[in-house]
Length: 312
Image (tube, rainbow, N blue to C red; front, side, top):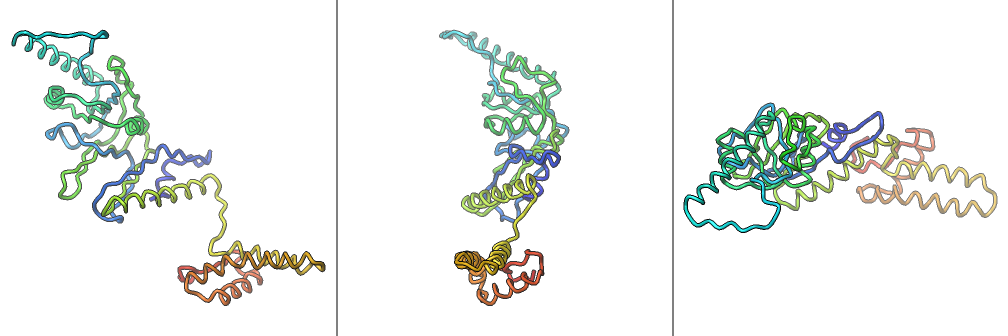
């Protein structure tokens, strides 16, 4: 998963990896083996109304960071309503404004609304009746990631909404989890195909948190290989090669310098010996055999302790 995620966002020509295009998320439930890599974005939200369609194909997303509500006066005011007729007039005004806003959204060609703020039940009902699925209370980082993934523009003022600022995605769908009512929103086949999400599963939060830390370490390792593909062989191979080189130079010395050089070579041997001991092997026998084989030129310095005892 880590390799596929990094290679999806990596610029191999520039040897650069943009970690902002990789989102790591998790959900309690299932097993670690159920984790998956999604070519898109997953957010912990669902559509604002249960009767809205659970899937939208060829989605065009209006990404709003402004409130989805009628405009407010710029000065403080107090509105006194003294009759039912006045209340109905106010209610009709709000409905008309919501209808205008929805019409403006549909005129741009958008068929999904992503809003950073909430909207009341009246607006939610109008969105449903106008067949315009919406998601509310989406966090700031998720809004930015959706905009990057869909090549959309964040709209801070409703008046600035235009067709050129819409994001595009192949599918926006709700994903359910087993028998629970919990849902998450999956945005797939985005315009910026480099954005990916590592979605982790686990039986409890502690396992998911540990998996996130381990995955982050793995992502960093793969990123480092993209930036600089030189590696140091493990299993104490590098330490054994260095120890042999120091011993060869110590033999050439005739003075007292040879003794600290031999001591340093012995210190280097302590690393593969510790690995062999922790792996249940005979440390002296294992390291002696490896040094003899490396000394003959076998493996070109790549031979180390077989900690997993796989024969490799």
